Image (cartoon, rainbow, N blue to C red; front, side, top):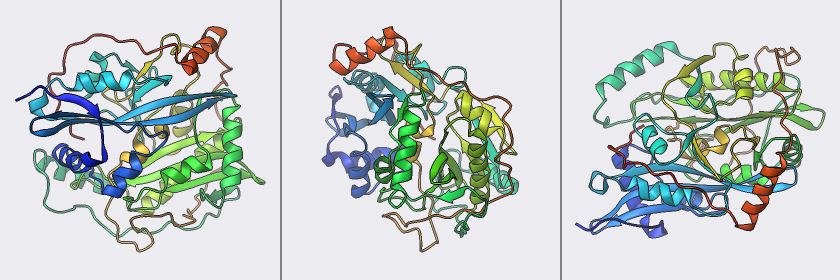
Length: 422
């Protein structure tokens, strides 16, 4: 058998990618779905390993636009690292290509599982966000379902069930009743969303593109089965906080989960962001989710999330990893949310019984029911605003944009195991 070669992924590989994802218990995609995810952001869809027997490894890649004041950067996030046993050690080739791609300020993996996490550390990635790379915040919504789910998981620890379990009818969220809360549509509310994004990028932090166009692209997934939950808090015609939630299912034997894909706000409106999380809890419970979770936590989102009743912090393995261009890690004011990672486009869609949630296209308006919450309540402490980076970092940004710098490389041993399951 020949040594696997590394090459860029091609449309002809889509069937082979589904074979790999099926082997790893990762969600598969239609041809239209692969075309969509490989066209997100700036393209550059990723790499495969190939030997005489075909494709034996894959690492997906999405390049996103970022902004800080008037500076425009590009960051890359990786997803679905899968290496078959016959290509053992191939993760190094894939991750080296990922880290070495030109023109990005950082490469990141924000959704690694316990078996894959040590490989990223060995291949030159550092835990990020600092001091919270192992943290998730979870809100239990259906305790009895969670207990049943644990029992079922123990029964199907090493095999997949032949049918979908925990598949039940879900209620469509009701319209909001709290003053200030409104459901958002990336098309009809494009002007307000674009203005909110402009205000975010001038608030002193590095921000992934959250323009209406970027959200429209995210919401056009042809394989989605449920309406994403996008809504915001308004003061007049101005948005001051936005939250995005999405239902997903880890596997056939697990109940649906409501993932917080994004929670972001303008200071001093953190209380409004906390109110949006309460709304997500209400919507998730009505939709049949067993729990709501925030899978990537930074300092500011942790403070806001803990204001929503029922929050539980879980700290286990390192699931957030990043590799920065030289000189940019320490001073770059980047506080990523799950929106920066693969959570918005790699969740396994749950089966649906609702006719409004067809597979493809966006149905305008996903109203949410409001719960009781005082958005005017004071926060214990606001997350301090970061200023534009120091001159040394500003120079690094300029060098990066001109192509003068390339990411460093740290040596490490090959991964001992590369069969990654969720």
